[in-house]
Length: 425
Image (cartoon, rainbow, N blue to C red; front, top):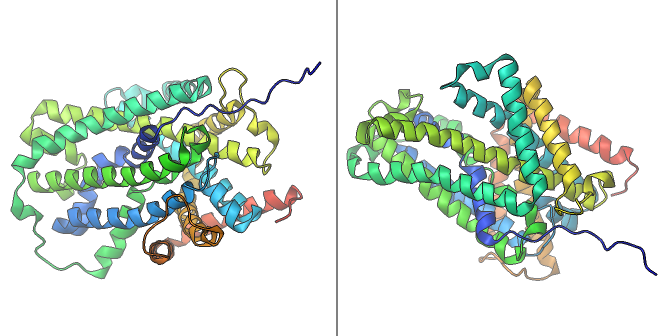
């Protein structure tokens, strides 16, 4: 009699729109409610055009994720792509940095959420109240993630709709009040202006790289991932461009505003509009928390599933069919970073880490084409992957010395972990 239990697998519950919501949720965070002022200060009336252009450049990178994603149906995203193309060492570095970036990002966003709530409830920003709130947020998110991918996806979907709704109201209500003259560039841009804001804008579009990470829980990832990558960039570009148009065209002195969308809403909607934008910012940050937990834990699970970290992190809950140990490890590590403030020292890793993921995926597309065409193939031969790869190199050239140094340290630590475990490339 066979007494062995059947293997436990992750549930495939995510559809293409669930993946799209995850991508939109991670790109559109709290920054969209504040960045219009920064862009207006640096680029003036060119700012809305700059967003549209960077949206097109981001699409060039996203198309590489779409093509690579159409070849795989497992968990891991860029980690799997670079593993298939360049071997275990390169992919481990990518997977390691992806996890670190998620931890750092989520730790930061938890504190942003506390600061946003502190506007109405100042006591939660310090002492035991802050400790309790941060702990409660992380533990609730952990519990939802462990309970099932469907439950996690529903929460992400609801929060994504909740964050897009106030932005849609802002755009639709504000467009009739836009002054066309404010949108017309009246002077040429200098190279200093372009270089100063290019990196900011490109990273403002960052986050869509999480879409393929939970592909092992998607119903049809080979089709769903390409759809979600493209849909996310289209939606995000439209929302961010139109939000900038409305803010620039309705709010005099936009560059000096600390709450640009709320201030602009006050002019053409009233006090209710300003309150809606403030609540929208809080909801937006809350959504980022949930998405970071989902994608971060799956990154760690993928490393374990492929044997690059201890198999304990690849454990799947027998009832809920979720990577429960990876979820707990990711959430509790994030909690420690958030409470101690250690994420500040790791923040510089985010820029280099994201570039590594982008560049690795673009290079993987070129390499994997040697195996034959992908189900989704970018038109134009190698042109788009090469342009996207050059874009990554250009962004790297714009990184600060601190970002390069800390990113290099993170890669060095990853290399030590890899070789100390006795692995071979």
